[in-house]
Length: 213
Image (cartoon, rainbow, N blue to C red):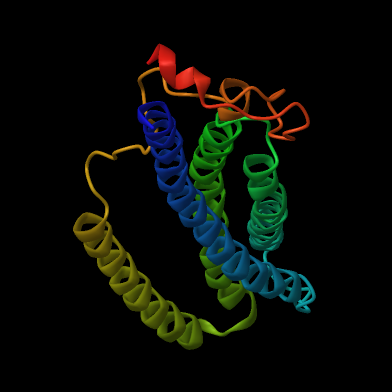
């Protein structure tokens, strides 16, 4: 009875630590889903902007800047959509079907690193899209129209930036706590219970490992 209770304690703790890591995994998948949705929309806007007819009399330097900023916005957001979709498809499978708990830790680690990179590409593409929107105004509108549109756009962009920074300071902690358990926990409970590591139970399972703890 004592041996069985000790074995249950180990397996329960092992399961609880994996549940904490699973919460982190679900958080990253939610972030990737939001990034992918917004980036796909902005990539569609950027591709539509490339089809805008620019008058021949427009300054060639403005046209070059417009095409460059629009292409950068399209490329950055397409990259975010593709990478986040791949992580959403393969990340949970890597954690779920891995041989032991290290696969869950590795999946969370890779998703965390990828999230940081994708956020940088997302904001880079957003800045390029804003620049493209301003430049196309200078290419198509007259002087009064340029002033009016750019003034409104500048006020809205400033308001958006201020609110984004306020939300960032209010919600993002200065220091993050990881769900990773740092001490030497059980990596593969199947090997301890007399199996081959896959918990197939072909040779039977045992709680005899509890005698050594």
